Amino acid sequence: MDCREVQQQLIEFHEEQIGPTESEEIRAHLRTCPGCREELRLIEKVIGGLKSQPLPDPGEAFWRDFPKRVREAFYEGKRPMGITILVRIREAVYASRKWFSFSKPVGAAVSIATIFLIVAGLLFFKMGWFWTGSRDRGEETLEGYYGGIGTVVSFFTAGPFESLSLYQLDDVSQGLLGWVDRMGSSMGEDLKGNGFIDGQDVFAQLEALSSEELDFVYEILKTRYFKPTTSLPMSMG
Amino acid sequence: MNIEGMVFVDGTNPLDHMISEEERRGLCLALNELPEKQRYTVVLKVYHGLNYREIAEITGCSEGTAKANFHFGVKKLRDILRD
Image (tube, rainbow over all chains, first blue to last red):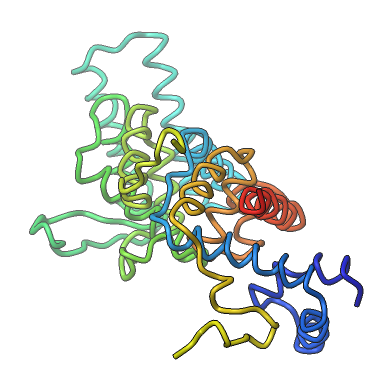
């Protein structure tokens, strides 16, 4: 291996992501080449130096795009038909509200009637639903999966007529963390074991949030991922 | 123990790997100045230990692009230390 080939692989070598034969060749080259040793030393310093720092926030742009990427992942991924139908109904409710400017009581009546019809429909088609017991907050909560009653309820309580409670938003953000964690990320390390919200269910809940609620979820997410420990100096002086 | 005399198998010395406070601050500032995609990639890889496939999923690019972003990012940070 010449210097160019070695230097192209030094990051992978440092990360131990190349095979034993190539590693040995690089080691042999490093023993005799001060230039490549210096290159490796700098790479190790960069990666080691960053790791020794508190985790920096990736910046506003990252968080601005993050919901969009999650939404895209949701739309590109497979989701149960029940959720798709609910999304469409909810969009229709939104649209009708826009056109007819429902008063709050009328809107509430429409949503209750819609919930009743959907629940009846779901039960008719024998879709699964169940109660979950109290969580750590000591609340009795109704939780459902893939078109179960809980999803319907939480879906519409997130709708135009009522806002999600703080707890519900917190659930969504925790569920999202769990989803990221299950994707193989270490981001949700502190929330491991938080498997009570299924990935698809989280997406459905995210889908149901207004932009203000979504912003709030990401604020929670941001605080949990990136602890506000970073105070970068404004200048080197 | 005299670490000055020690040599790693790759021929480097433990003292070579130490990083000063000034270098650390410089790295942090430089990280914030990297182009967006390179910065995300470096943060996700170094701090979260994600692999290129996972980074590609999160940042919405190909695995090859994620790898290239990491390489360019680290090399720019390396230049900061070299200067």
